[in-house]
Length: 342
Image (tube, rainbow, N blue to C red; front, top):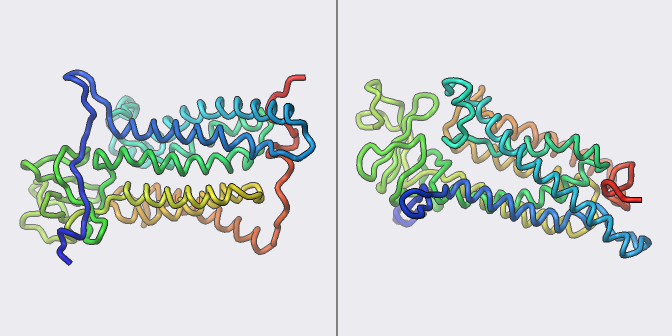
């Protein structure tokens, strides 16, 4: 097969520009659209799961409780947005602390540098006290939430593809991504028209142009070039890890969507998401060069712990054959859908 045919690519676009003074980042727009669509799905599928029809409660009372749940979910989504922003930046700063020049530099999130796993953790942690205060069990809220989250990730990753973000090591296979024009985001810099290079963690340099990619140790001269250096890897393009994440997230969403249609033990959807997405990130981050703590990156350590805990819990439940039917309500012992007027 012709190597040029065994690849994909497109011109990247760093901004949607409107006139000479206004521009929108496709990356931020993708995240926003993914969040809004995911939030809309959660408020649609969440209330019926948390307050299911037991065949006894009058229809009007059932709808009233579900409206209360929907209102509570709206409040949680607002705080989830806050937690996502804080967590995404905080986790990135912790993993790349040595790269910042001071506290102000750490706050400049608009310059780039966020962690998706940190955003998820922040959204969950900030809502734990609210779930308890409103009387909801953790899994009763999280089970429908992970369905919406998988959808949001699948949609949000489109913005990463538009700007050419999360590029990985050189690749030579069907989904290798080739550069076909446009300005790449940092750490990539244009060293000549149409030729890009990035100084990566560990003293590596990766180069990319329309002809392909190469990876080498950074030259002593400090030049961003592999010329005259032993090439450690080369390819027709690079691994586009955001593309892999998007595709696998859509598969995960399809699986969770089918699973949520039938009664299941509380927690199965959440744990399935954790195990699946954790394994996804372990694989995807192995295709990038990033700061490592021992053999793994910070994201991989987080993903590994989450995946192992979720998989072990699901396995334990399966071995014990604990197939208890779902409770009549997704609420905790208070058995209420948030504050219910007298």
